[in-house]
Image 1 (cartoon, rainbow, N blue to C red):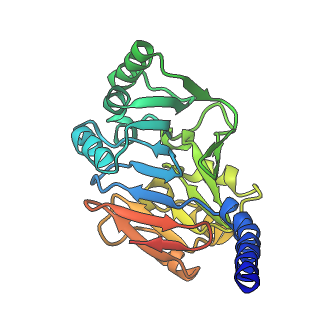
Image 2 (cartoon, rainbow, N blue to C red; image 1 turned 180 degrees about the vertical axis):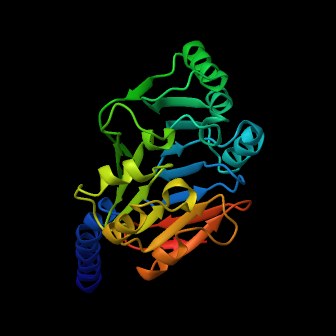
Length: 270
């Protein structure tokens, strides 16, 4: 009996010891991040998920709306915590009003630049009808998506020569990793980013679909991206050589989705 009692006590002690060793590790466990670059041809839409929260950056063209909604449903999306529209070009906001109609929306974040188009009017109509929180980003924004730290960097100037330079830039911290989504930023917008204290970027959604401008090389040399995703091009873009010179792995997204997974330490591209 004494031996049996000793064994029970010993096992209890071991179990208790394992509990206190494993518990901190479980509490600090990193939620998996999923990023899906939707293959919508000549348009942008990127879905980001961590834990039970998510963010959609841009919504493709109007003619992509049904495909986009089906893609989101396939990911079991019922609510979008954040929808961020980088700038009001048709290949970035075309499906927005339909996405806002179809899903429960936590917050819509838009660039301060508006063109006065029917697309924008449709978006505003749905915002009013559903009472969606609508933030016009006039200053930098910060929020969390699960364990991700999301920073939205707004344009610094009141006016630009190119509509694309009104693009919102999204910087996301994911544990040890950093992701940058460049919208359609061109020369003036990249010039604003060059003086900033940006980290080395593990995943870069290349600005303006990989089209080169005077500041492209300096910007790529600044962020030294490990992985780059270029939308709208099947195989090559104007800045592929600049990226390769920095040792960047390049993926092109056109008509097939690209999924990126991360545990906050390693990026895995499927």
